[in-house]
Image 1 (cartoon, rainbow, N blue to C red):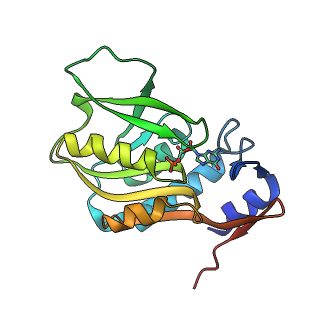
Image 2: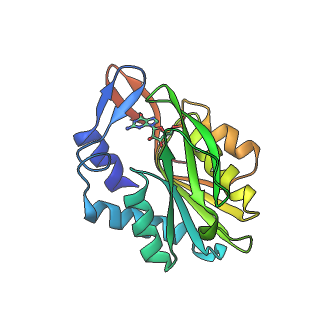
Length: 192
Ligand code: 5GP
């Protein structure tokens, strides 16, 4: 998505450890107009998939997910991150290792917000090693819901996440795909 790529080039900061900081429009301050365009783009890509619910993870997935939900006319559920969990019967939960924080957290979704008839679109801000997406898939699987697509705002294609998800036949759609960071510069995957 051209508008997003241009914004990344303008406002993104490449940090050490292969991390891109985009807190000017996505991870701290949020640009609603850009979120709206991204939501419309996700909705267009997944329009004929019969999506009934969007699932994301707090906090940075929420903004793009809400705009996709608005465009598709479906509710949005975000998995909450919890530090420690005394086992609760009314929650689906799993552990996710965070690439950026180098720590593991437990993510949970209330059982009342996932149903086995659901056709789910997962949305997240970044795809790196695929651990957040895999955690969300696990929660959906526990509910016997069907994950029909995975929409990503920024994919770092040099990390293994896309490959892991495609090996399991998921339809991964990323609005920006980064091939590499070269001398602190973002290089995108050339679209065919
Ligand atoms: P994964 O689980 O695919 O390894 O990483 C995805 C999660 O880690 C995303 O939810 C995002 O919060 C965070 N993340 C991974 N790489 C980056 C990055 O380069 N920049 C930012 N801001 N977050 C990242």
